[in-house]
Image 1: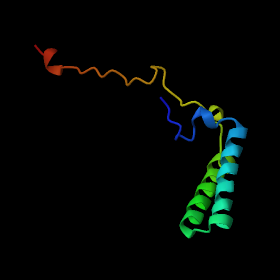
Image 2: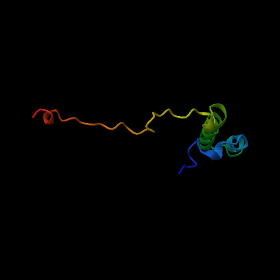
Image 3: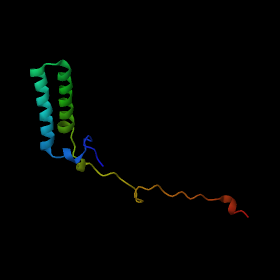
Length: 91
């Protein structure tokens, strides 16, 4: 089961959700900066806004656009190791 905190979660796939998330964090940062003026919250909310803008708008790649992992013909299972007992052939 995928968590919502995973940035590749399907919830974040629509552009409008990502833009809304960045907009809300930006509005919160502006509120803290111009109304409340508490230095700790100004830095904290500005950091959340910058991180959200970076992850969801600038660096974003759609998870379905990524190439699938290459697997071998066995379906990803390791090959079976057969040990040969050389002493059994020398009777």
